[in-house]
Amino acid sequence: MIREYPDRPFVGVGAVVICDGRVLLARRGKEPRKGSWSLPGGAQKLGETVSEAARREIHEETGLEIEVLGVIDVVDSIQREESGTVRYHYTLVDVLAQTVNGDIATAGDDAAEVAWFSLDELEPLELWTESTRIIGLGHEMWTILQSSSSPNPR
Image: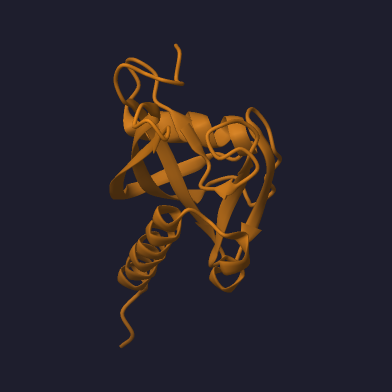
């Protein structure tokens, strides 16, 4: 499928994977945003659910197995030429996830590099503003889920 100058949007799935309070990011090895840090993920395949796509993409890009905990938000990524022609258009479904096989991530597929970052380490990375917002929302969801799963003190 040709993704550059499409005739329709592509559905992409990204994951805010959190482990020990840190978030997993991938340095993109391909356009759009080649060389930039972003949430790991990729295009959904025909017949695949959002959760299945997230699990497959995270495994392909990082070697990690994940459990999807919920949907964070849906974002449109549209890049236009100066003439207004759409060069890329992705509708991105971002999910919150946790690893089920540890935190040893290895770059694979179209990721040039993968690494874990604390929230304090994100600013110098100059992430896409929507990625920063999604990570913040994901961290809030993670905190709520963690506090609701803690046993009640007596």
